[in-house]
Length: 285
Image 1 (cartoon, helix red, strand yellow):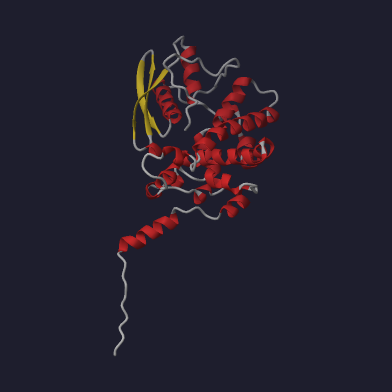
Image 2: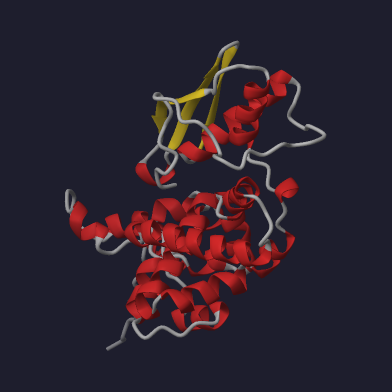
């Protein structure tokens, strides 16, 4: 009796799903430890630090928000933001002992900004190690500045919880070595501060920023912010409230014809005056 071999074929979408699943998996975390120069006592902290909310929500049932939060890195990012700020402030104080408070604040804001965090993240190829959801993978999430910045802050917090502040500070000093070395007040322009000082010099009130709209899913949210000053208003968008406000401030400066002043004067007493309608700029990116 002739034997027959039956071939079982799977639809093309099956293999596409498998490939996408593999692509969404992070590289070996041990390799990441070697890359960042720190070995975790509790590797689960690092795993959570590289896990984006888009992946976490794919792993739980609809409405299981608390379970998803226990998997993703946003709470670590919250802590990492503070640890990074302290470590950078300490380094700047030691590197520039004679600098004014205003200049130190300007440099610090530049160093802890999303742009700088993303730049440092790309330098260590952090995007290759992220654990992201299918949708985020399709839209290039591994290359998004806000996502990279958030993940780096989460890793800083993971080191802090694993071994304390000293190792976390050492990690920040190591990965930020070049940025800290090159930081100066002139290379750290904060458009919001610059706009306020420009308006104050013309005896005008500080600008007022307000969020007038949002769009996109939670992990790809875009914010529409309006900046209002005595003689006009502009609108700008950004992946965070901070970045949208900064873009709006830059647009106002361009309208005023002072986006690139020859000399910047910084106030030592405070970075800016807070108007009652201004957004809390500490909202997490």
